[in-house]
Length: 170
Image 1 (cartoon, helix red, strand yellow):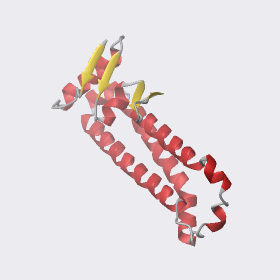
Image 2: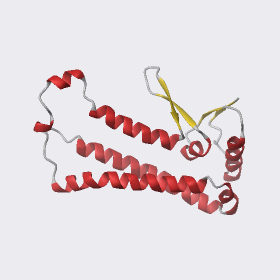
Image 3: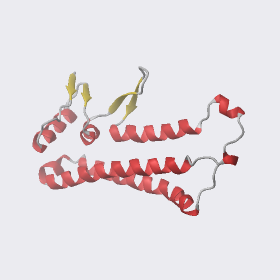
Image 4: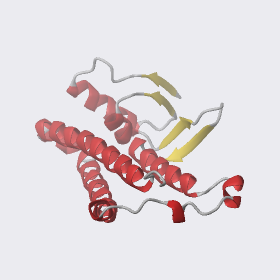
C-alpha cells in the first residue's frame, strides 16, 4: 500500500509522466491526495470524497467522473423538495416567465454541456496512450490545457443553467 500526499508538487513533466506510469502499473492500493485534476484522472480508479458532517462517499472513476456525478446529484437533490414544501402552493405558478433569449439558452445548454463532456472523454482517451507522452509532449501539454479549459467552461455552463432555472419568483 502506498500513501501519497501531493506527489506532483515540484515535478517536471518527465518525472510526472514517470510517476503516472509507475502508479498505473502498481498492483497494490494507493491512497492519494492531490490538487492536480489531470493527474488524478490519469491514475485513479476510485475517488473518496468528504461530503461534510463527517460523511465520506466513494465514487468509481477519476476526478472528472466524480464531478459529473456530483453535478447530476446536486441537480436531482434540488429537484426534490422537502416535506414542508409539498404543503405549500406550487412554485411553478408563481415563477417568472423566462425571456425568449433565456429559454433558448436553457434549451441549448444540455447539448453544449454534453459536447464539452464528449470532448473531455476524447482528450482522456488520447492522454491514456502512453506513447503520446514520449512522442509528442507538446501535444500532451496542449491536451491537458484544453482539458482544464473545458473544466472551466463546464462549470460556467452548469452555473448558468442553475441560474436560469432558479430565476426569482414574482
